Image 1 (tube, rainbow, N blue to C red):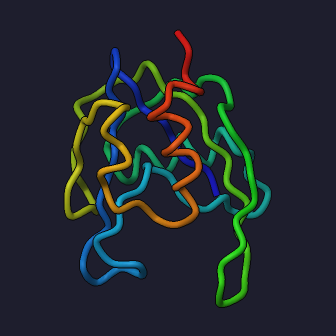
Image 2 (cartoon, one colour; image 1 turned 90 degrees about the horizontal axis):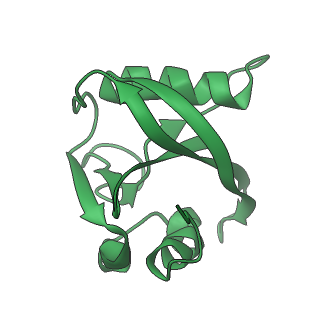
Length: 129
């Protein structure tokens, strides 16, 4: 899985899953699955085009970790910074898309797999200018 930390000044873009998706109404960062034979950066660029209608310049990898779910299964997550993109952000698949200050991230009900990253972002441990 790949996800984008799309930033502007001290804010980051977060997205809320719809009520009919798995883990309904949880917040997450935009992104998705890596297709077979696809590079991480190419997958993220494709996902951002599909989900938000933007052509993103994918920056540095900020974090990568594996999350193990309590009911079994695991997912490997790769988070990349996005500072620049072309086009206007469009909400194509989410219940909501919102710009929020980094320090307020813990007040949102994020996917379990994102919570450690959310805490680090809120504490200013990642995304140094």
